[in-house]
Image 1 (spheres, rainbow, N blue to C red):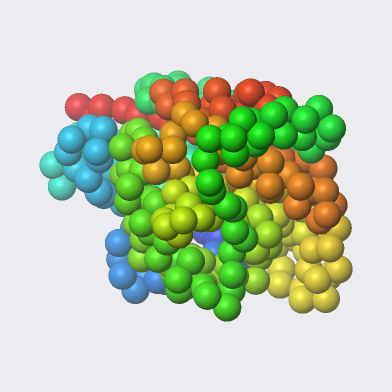
Image 2: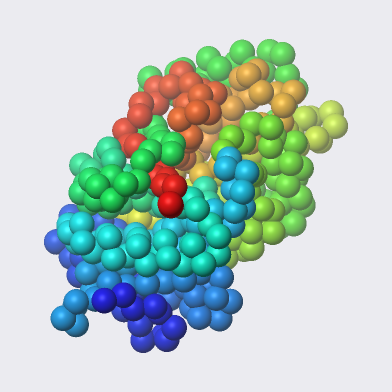
Length: 364
C-alpha cells in the first residue's frame, strides 16, 4: 500500500525509515534528523513543492520516495526529478513506489523521470552509488546498498550519466606535484589566494557570485548553482565551514576575483558518532578530530582556465590541510562528461574511488 504523505506523523516515519533499513550497516551515516524533518516539512507539507510517499505492508515501512517537477537543461523540457529512494531488496516495493509516481507524472503530461538528486541542492548527493561500498561516505555524498542498482534496472531505468569521486592522499608526493603547478602558475601570473573572511562575508560572497557567473560555460548538464541558494546555504552552514578551506583567488593589481574553491571538513566523521542527533559537546569534541575534507565547488573564470590556477589554489589549501590535521581529500563528484576537472585532479594524484549513477526512464 502506498501512503501519500500529508501529515507530520507520516513525514517523520518517512525520515526515520532509514534508521531501521541501515541499522546494521557499518558505513552508513545518518543525517541530522532534526534538520531533515524541518526541510521536508517545508517542501512537502507547507510549500507542497515535493510529493513524498511510503510503501507500507502489514504496518511495516518497506520503501520511500520523494519527487518533484522542474525544467531540465539537458532534456529541454519539464521532467520529474526523484530523490530519497530507499527500499528493502524487493522489486515489488520498487514497482509500487515508481508506478505511483508515474501515474502522477501522466496527470501532468510528464513522460521522463530522472534521479536521484538532493532536493536541496542538485550538486550534492546526486546519483545511486554503484562503486565504492567499502568506505564511509563523505559529507554531501550518497550512500546506499549495492542492490539499488539492480532494482532500478529491473524496473526499467537506464543510465543517464555517471558522476565520479576522486580521492587524493595529503602526503609529500601530492604536495610536491602541487608545488610544481604552483611555481609554474606564479611565474606568469600575479594572483593571490585569500581565505574566506567572515568579517567581510558579504563582500566575499559577492566575489564568489562574480566568479560563478563568469564560469558557467564550464558547467555541463546542469545550470550553475543559484546564488540565492548559495548565500542562504552559506549562512546556514557557517558553523560547519573552516574559513581556511574556502579560497578566493584575486588579481593583485586589480583585485579582480578569478577563482573560487569550497572545501568542507568531512563532518560525516562527526555525525557517525552522534547517530543523527544534535549533541553540541560531542560535535565540538569530534570536530577537532576530523581527518578528511571534501571539495564541494570549484570555479575558475575563463581567462584563467587551463593555466594552472586550480593547482595553485589547491597547493595553498593542502598547506592548510597539514596545519589542520587533514590527511585525506575527496574531490567533489564530477560529471563523467566534463573531463577537465577530472584530469586536473588526476595530475596531482587523484584516483577515482567512487561512482554514482543518475538513472532515467521514459514513461509510456
